[in-house]
Every structure is written in C-alpha cells, then in structure tokens.
Length: 299
Image 1 (cartoon, rainbow, N blue to C red):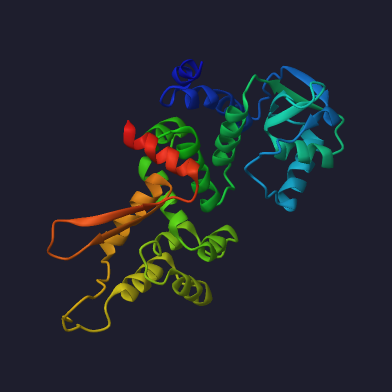
Image 2: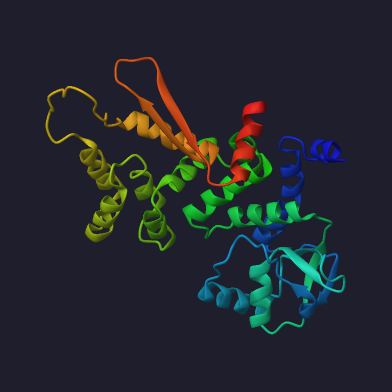
C-alpha cells in the first residue's frame, strides 16, 4: 500500500498534479473571469484548516479584499475538501484569506471547488498557494520552499520547473533561512529587503550589520560593500604555534550556507588551509530531519 502511494506521487509528479488546481485559479483570477465552482455552500459550513502554514493575515489587505468582494463577489472559488472531523462541513485547502474577507463582507455563501485530498496533500497545496502569493515576504517564501523539499521530497529543480521560478531564485531565498532569527524578523517586518539580507548570509556578524543597514538606510550596493569590508581581517597576523582556530573564508561560509539551504539543516565545514582533507558536520533538530537525510543519502 505504501509502495503504491509512493509510485502515485513519484518524483515531482504529485506536485504537478496539485499545481493544476492552484494554477487554474491563479490564471482565472488574473483574467478577472470567474471559475465555474463545483457548488455554492453556506459560509458557516466552511471551516479553516487548523494546520494552515500561514498565520499572519494583514487587516488592511483583508479589508481591501472584502471591499472588492462586496462589489464583484468572489471571482476565485475556494478549494475545499469534506472536513474529516465533520462530514457536514468543508475544510479549506486553499483560500482562507478569501473566506475571512467574505465574512467581513457579510456574504452568506461562498463558491467552492471540492477536491479529495489527504492531510499531506492539503498541507502541500496550502504551501504552494502561499508561495504563489505576490505579497509573501522572502522569509515566508523560503520557508515554503523548504517545507516542500523536506516534507514531500521535492528537489529545487522540480520546484523551479513546477512553480515557474529559476533554481537560483529558490536557492538564494533558502540561504536566507541561515540568517539569525533577528535578521529574518527584520525581513518579515519589511525593514530589510531580500537583497539586503542576501548580502549578510556570509557575514561574520550579520545582526550588527543588519542594524547598521537599517539605521543608516543603506542601499543594497552599500550593504554589499559594508559586508565585504566587515569580513576583511583587520591586520595581518603572525602564524601562531600550537593549536589554533582557523577563521573560515567567505567561500567556505558560502558553501556552508548553500549546503544548509539544500538540506534544510545546519552544515559546518572544517577545512584547514593547504590540505585536501577536512570534516563536514550536519546537525539535525528532529528525528524527521534525520529520516529525511537518511532517505537522501540512500537514493
């Protein structure tokens, strides 16, 4: 049974199938031409997904959408499934923002597309829809890519192909997840752009530099120069004798960041100058990450 399900999903095949519903709705929304819903249901019979990965809904944007719904109605139907906890209700797979705005607009019914998704597919579609949203910040988008890769086994190449993104775009965003949480919070809050944040990925003191960039209102180019300068040694040092700690160069830190982004786990590289050998350490936070790593290594 498990083998059959694994074959059905395949490498990227499940993603492409799930993309169909989201892509169709996105295209219809852009054309402002309504998609034919499967049915229209009372709004009180629709409930949100308790595992929805997106937790933040901006009130101003909800109000703007509610005003549009009052005038034009809901152009893009919600994707739902029969609620596994109550067969009389429908659980939202994609479209919670529209559902919230419809309540604000005091609608009594909402159009829906009913699909048969299991719990894993529900989460997968929710992540895909969130990634496709134009107002998603870089950290949320990167976190969505990481979830798709390590919860569902999708590669960066498959994600790029299915989502219409370049592989470098996905890789560069995922590197931002290696920044300290305080710096990531600045990106989420809009204090730092993704371009500013990328300049800090290989910086020795990203938090300090981030605060300087915000305080001085530096451009991305100025931030790049600041980060590069901060990584330069203050003065040549005499070679000490005995045991000493070698400072990692920018290339090594960049490679660590790339591997960490690809694996979704912290990677440390210890490589002594002028030597061929070294040590690579992968740190996992949960047993799920360990299982995922074992799965990748056994392919």
